[in-house]
Length: 181
Image (cartoon, rainbow, N blue to C red; front, top):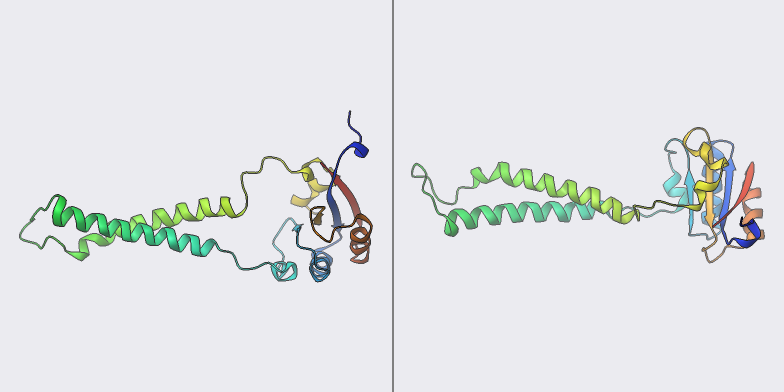
């Protein structure tokens, strides 16, 4: 059986008493210059993104791109089919009649936008991720019920076991735990 001495330190997990102290701790960690940290709580905390210094998501642009591909592709396909591949004159109507394209173009725009949202979210979040060393922490099980946690990874350029621990203690952490791989 491997002991903690044989394992590599992955990061430090700090538990906080309430959402307000977690928010202030996230601000303190961000102001100290840490980049590789995350917060966990059982519900969304207003302002946590700003406190962590997170940038706006690129997901909206991905969804827009997929939606435009769906719209342009649908219109191009219908115009090509009706004008050259298989022209059918139905009741004397023109071959290229924009109102008939609206339902199909709308449906393909929505379909590809949905695919873009799902696959873009998976890509941006680095999912699927079946294992994380945090899952070994018994204390971390409270994150989905009544726990408020901040986790700093050891891969961060500023990470120092002593300095990081002191920073989290100063931020009023009620419990600190070293997480090993």
